[in-house]
Image (cartoon, rainbow over all chains, first blue to last red; front, side, top):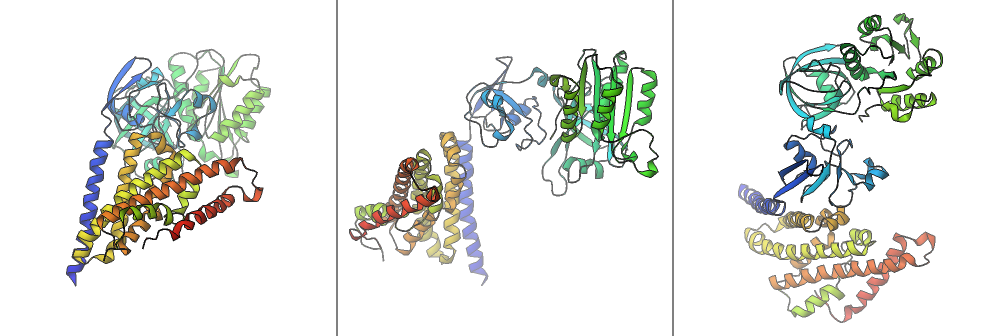
Length: 373
Length: 197
């Protein structure tokens, strides 16, 4: 009885093994593209890498980190790179993330392009500054019921050079059903002068891979990997009135920006900071920011609750943050001076704020934000 | 016992009178969907021909040298499919390397050759009809070419039909199926001349 079973399974097994061997041999032979040269910014840098892998990963191997919030799965559209040599038409996986100009200029998702031959690309110079850091979680603190402040000491390299407002990507190891390390983008709330630390504010997103990890598993003393700095969100040195609007963990870049301005003595600039939350338990850093108001006369902090509870005993502004912004733009803010918008929050909040700012003649190209989605 | 049949007759029969698509109606899904475009039809036709020829021969060898001697005849379906899947996998890598454009146009239909009924169907014909190795090779090559001929002709006809004043309700799959019906009649019309069993 046992012999036929054994015979059958070993015969099928042997056939499968031979075929698998054949496939892997073909893979080795066919997918061997040899050494490929990546030419960056017209000869600024010439890299020799092994062909066959996606451009994003090949660049990361040699220390150039193109932003990627999804880790190369083609679902965030962040890893755009302008390709100036021929790599074939856009793939169906790229098209949803491209607008018309980008398609014409041959902007591509670097995670979707397989390196098969020499390639020339153009990337912003700032990407050369991006490094991958290993660090240790020094402190985790609850700032609200669903936002944690994570303070990370950088071990290797030890120092980071960034502009207040930029973000890093935090990588967490595989856990439970998540089989691969996962990266997500978080704005740094630490000051640029604190060069060997980064601080992140992580709000628990139901079902979020990284936020769930940070909220339920991350321990002080744990080793983590962060990559950065990324992003075009930083203060423009113009002297215009700054209209800052944030909600929830969107507090992070403004904490960094405001303390950075104080440190650098740029307190002659007028800054209005609107912070929106649902109820009082979603508010944080109130004391610190009120403290800042006393030492910086032209800084104004306005917190608003959209659903104040009776027990909150809230005496401040109420309503959606856009309504509060509109109210202040109508009554308090001197609109004869030039104004700039700085936004950080959910995509819905961003769109609503942009609409209000446009209504009050803030030029659309002077409204700054980073959209992570 | 292997049937006595002249190699040339078998070859032409498998292309024309016993066309795998239009006389046996195997491999219809990709036939209908890919035939929208003439270039991809040719590409897929070539791919199916290559896969069919290789798997026909390999599966004959597996059947005669492994499954029959070991008394594992009942495992034939699973083994045939494994062999087909592996050959398709290899072909996929080769096409991706040699012609990325063809790889793109074939898209999902390339891996789906694995489950193309024409391929397993031809292999099972080889088994039922007890072909010799030589006959299997001729038959599978012929069937592949027949499949290619059918899809290429349908694609060419559809190119014409696209410009024809087809009634709105029949546009697309409707008129395509009618076209296929006429093609099948024409192919089956030859069946009196040659028959393979």
